[in-house]
Length: 113
Length: 112
Image (cartoon, rainbow over all chains, first blue to last red; front, top):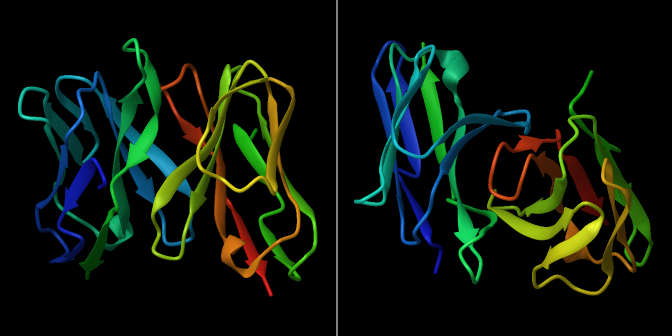
């Protein structure tokens, strides 16, 4: 069972709409990553956050550690935002050290002009 | 300068062949990784190296052998390629395990 669940799996929006992508995880973590995979295949790290909220341009990421939930918001969406957005959390090794990332299955976003 | 560079970007080869994918990072990171992205676009860790030492080896066939000559390089060698090995392979590096990941642009491997 994948320990990172994302919703929705697919999302189509009109240009200008406010977008929300959700991520829930089942393991205890100290940080969560949001990644963007472009249609061409490259992966870009958008955010790493461990509490509260981070903002970069039109992208906002929030996390609630107690509820094991994070959201990625895109304001004033644009066709160039069309990509797959992936949530990832590090596993915890025995002894509590951070392990490797495990990934959600991604949310495919298409923004129509 | 590209932070994490992989070569080649595309690789088409026949079943049974042996091939290598190279990865180099110029970020000074201590940890490097290989991930496989399958046809359903799901990313999964294969190997993780910290300062040239293997720290994670997930359930990957023995035909896959990572090699880290120094902490800036992590190459992936695949023996006796099979059709199921067709995927996109991503190299990544991080400041420490779990933090500050940077991904390479991926290598699309097609086995025919």
